[in-house]
Length: 184
Image (cartoon, rainbow, N blue to C red; front, side, top):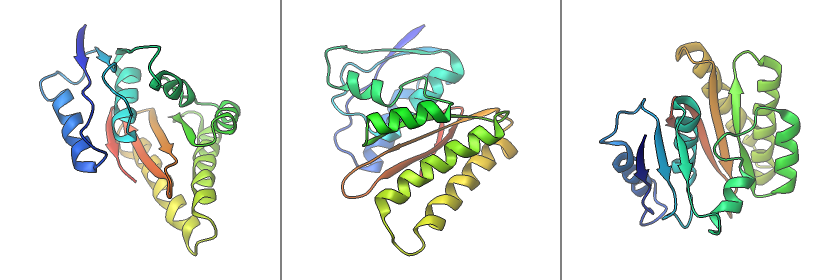
């Protein structure tokens, strides 16, 4: 299994994060398992976390890092890399770690449970946005549509969802299938 060292992005701009992700994966066979070394990262961006989590889950990859690093507790808080697929665990994790939404595994066969996870994710976004006019539709519709598209068009039986609260506004790091991110 090839080890891929994840470099620290220079800043948190979307372009920089995409370039970092591209450099990580450009010379690899995407569907092969890899060991992702995250030791150099001093802050994880959602754009890096979700595709890595999906890759680890979909292709039996692994990751390693320094357990003494501050990121270790963060990765535990978001249930990286394996996520949660239960409403109960999602609620426990989101209450325990107020600013972090755990990585959610959306499984096709768990229709009602999956829809409840989607709703909980959306409700956390509403709480941050407050009573802004149209906020519920602006959040709920894209999330529901993206999740529906995973199962209707990708031939996959699971997808991944992750969000992170940032001041002053949340960043909803979209929906993933097979490690391909759709940013919300």
